[in-house]
Image (tube, rainbow, N blue to C red):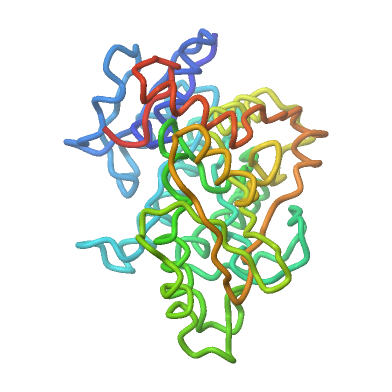
Amino acid sequence: MSRILVTGATGRLGANLVKRLLADGHEVIGTALPNDPQQGKLTGLDVAIVHADLRDASALRYAARGCDAVVHTAALMNDAAPGVSRADFVAINVLGTFNVFDAAASEGVERVVYVSSTAAYDVYAAKPQPLAEDAPLTPTSLYGLTKVVNERMAEAMDFMAGLRVIMLRPNYIIAGEEVLGPWTAGVVVGCYRRYCTDPRMALYTPEMPEPWRAVEAQVKAPEDLVVPRDPAGLSWRWHVCDVRDCVEACVCALKAGPECFGRAYNVVGPEPADWDVVVPYLAERTGRQWYEIQVPKAWRFWFDLSRARAELGFEPRFDVRTMIDHALRIRAGEDLGIIPGAI
């Protein structure tokens, strides 16, 4: 048995990771914010909680004391959240990560698994696919920027203090019933509204100043299931990750050999999610109707898993159709052991 600190223990990934580590026989320490409304996720789990803001260096050092490993999952994702300034966002994500790394180094922790993100890449732009770990780190969001900074920090802390860090880059982590939600007309319209005016984006459409209007004109209701196709007939393609696969990647990183220290690894599902496969299957399983809409550009991105497979021994198990099957079983009242993203 080893003693493992999980930051962000009440998060989508953190809570499910805590549950898995306890089941594997580890002693688990978790961090959570004081008065965290999501702490009920951990009810019944034998995890010791340290209430700490990531900016509280002394509390993080206390939490790391005696630990063999740290898995750092905690981060803010939305830099436009009410009440959080951009400076606060960076302080929590970057200074907070420095405090986690520094606490681990000071307390002699043997390894750190840092949960970064594919937001470190430019997933919104039309780039050669699939994206491998040596793709340029050119984030298009403040969140992605903090992930890139933290990865560089991890590399520097290795040189400065001998901190051994393995970096994971998951994409779009989904827990339980959440997989049933994103395949709708409203999501497609929202993506066009947000991403069509930036020349770097895959959905950039200079010949159509307001391309979302042409998309909206084909939509009957925002909640409708749709398959968006470009003029060449290509449907959208995303690459998502079941939370259970992301947990497995963390476990693989905790077991990996020293040759993996300082390396980054993509973490996604076993195959990309093509909307023209996912949507008809979801409609069949739920009895909902679906239809096709034509869009000016296809948004298609997916990731290369060969490094994670070869070096970490990571083998994801949950494709989107399996995730849908499991989500419907959960909706019917079956307990599959997945802690939901929010309670």
